[in-house]
Image (tube, rainbow over all chains, first blue to last red):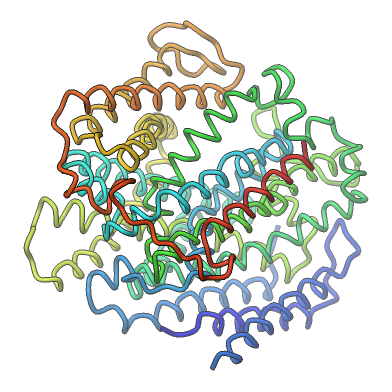
Length: 57
Length: 549
């Protein structure tokens, strides 16, 4: 069976890049750059998954 | 509310990945057991997260947020008194018998332990119930997307059902489980920022508590009597009804969740599955309930947020989605809606993969065609996957047209479910319990549930025989129905068992406590052993209950 951490890592890395690449969007009720922070967190998570997957093989 | 092209892009990316995972697993599906049970091959971290995600459907997420807005933090009782103690119990005490019996499903365990009629009763009720609940959650999702995004009901229902069908048809249970892990992470990363942003906007947890009545941010302080809290429940009903009967009945006997643990690659892994799942389960209230509480506080602040109205009251079911549209910019909004879609799919795929196994092994192989080659059962497994999805869609439309029928069905199922845990408890821990005892106990318990409902009234519900007692809320009524059903089933099973012939001890090997070898793993580190792991979960649980007392 393939290593599930691989597709999960790729998915969240792409998601993170998409969000980080559009930091200008703002929500109605908050001034926080939500896309930037959430995107960075997802990039970090996706990267960690990929690192764990590569370490094993 | 309208979505930007990034948001649609993110949704499409998610669809692509779940389908790809199904496609990658397609070649592994050579026998009916590969397809329906994963053949005890899945690593423990995957089964643990799937165990959790299969239960984390869209209705759960939306409903918990709504309850958070309506009742406050007491909603966390469903996690911190319900759920987690039952998850500890099933992992430590029951999994040795489920996994050790080599049964392929929970109803099959009942056949090995008791007899065929008990199995059929459980299998038939379970099969109908899973389809029905996946239909109802499909309806809820379609309605929500129609309301919030203006998407066409039929189109969103058919598209999401089709995607679930494709990946479960291709990769069976393994595909459902693997995708549930992706969906779980998406749910957490998609919803957690909402709770954080909402509480930050209010000025932190203390500022939020200061803006709300104290009952909204405590779980036990106002549980002394029914009049003190908006749920209308008191501590005994909560602990015995919710914490014991209903939660143990669900987490310890429902094949939907037990199936995930049974797919684990060893007995130890199967036992640790619910225990490892308990850690994220304990954290979930902060992600799904806190946004609801914060929504009420935000509304009091007068910053331009308000819950939509419905029939003269607030429409709490929209708390999650309306908050998202106010706090998520385009981009993150796409992630949030994709997370909602993911929670719906994980719930539905869970239902479908549990249904096809029970249908194929317990109903079809047991009663329609007994000795066919395995290829035939693989085919039936695939066909029942398609049939299950089709019937779910039909149930979704039924729910849309006839709300009342759905309420009645839901009630009947709660009567059938309430006594189940008594049967399993006696079956696993009392050698003397017999098949006749289990069967009559289950019927009597269901009857007791119906009678309790007929004799009591809450919020205008029940009392169709006569009104002997009034409950302050339907929630309190449900808890007490469960308590009566469980006790009746427990006692009737004991009496009838004592009056009927027991099974030989040899036949019960591997199925009952006392004649089953429980594996000991003293040489493993503590985090790989169920006992110590359960103690850590228990300690964390007590700490949470005390902190938010």
